[in-house]
Image (cartoon, rainbow, N blue to C red; front, side, top):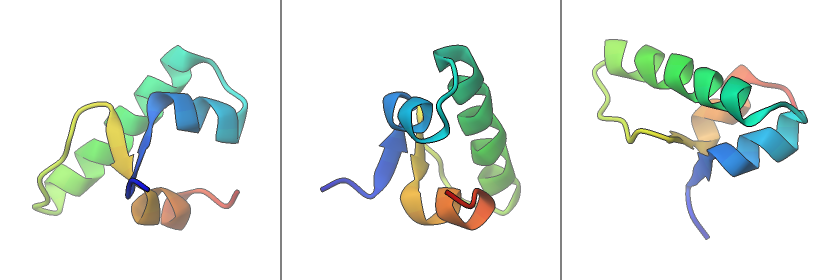
Length: 55
């Protein structure tokens, strides 16, 4: 099991379009970069996503 969500996961969880899911991941990754973390394009740590979105 991965510790990251991909675009497809975010699309299903939030029931949104793929383009909107990419924008959300980009925004969350920017927040993490600003905090000094290394990020992976197109993926977001599950733990961080769950902190930001109540699903």
